[in-house]
Length: 340
Image (cartoon, rainbow, N blue to C red):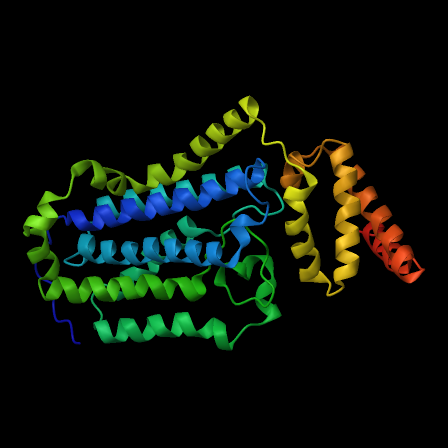
């Protein structure tokens, strides 16, 4: 698997741009599920369901893998510093903008180290692997992929270390793509790019009828993936917001009861408690016309949040009293909340 020296620049492969476009479409579909859930057109927990989580990770993996290939194809013969610095700066600025925007919109789950942050860091670290033996690159990739399965520590839960991905309980984020294991995916892309480049796969493929016949309109988004990434979600949110304004989703208690009970059961194995608690809190929110906006607590005012918290505590006391004859569990929760 020894790669040998890299000698010549590979012509642009349309299929890589098309693959990136397909990944963008898949990403937009996943983010659209978030938008539909936030505005009440889909179940609140739709984006967190196992199948959707696997879908999201496949999308992230495809972007990162393709980024590894692209680094080799663009700079494997020798780093073209002007274009490299320009592209890296664009990614860093975009990552910072994503962090700022999500910190304002979703302060509890803002993106502190998402896919753009990872690709920026991987593009820097990847320079050390541009001319390494492909087998060595694969070995390091396996290390990055495997380590989180065997080693985690609360030491890495400190804010400045969360980007490593080795914390036992990482902070919740709308997009969390840490160095471990995702840099391993990037390195696999680099190894594939190195082998394919040295053996002439990309050059020969770029000359095939199939690659040359791929429609340009399908390749263009992939060639401008960064700008598409930045604008697609605001556009989707605006469209769903407009739809919600013109045709409100009309959420009922039945629409959100199942997600509420699933969330409750994830923290408590008491099915009877969860059934009664969700009925209580959802009825209260329905009376205050908060079921729609309550799909995202970030959209509630401080006064509304306070009302929801008070109603939660009241529902917990009532259900505890009904089931067990004592509201002690709810009182403990209320006391704990008051000390925060």
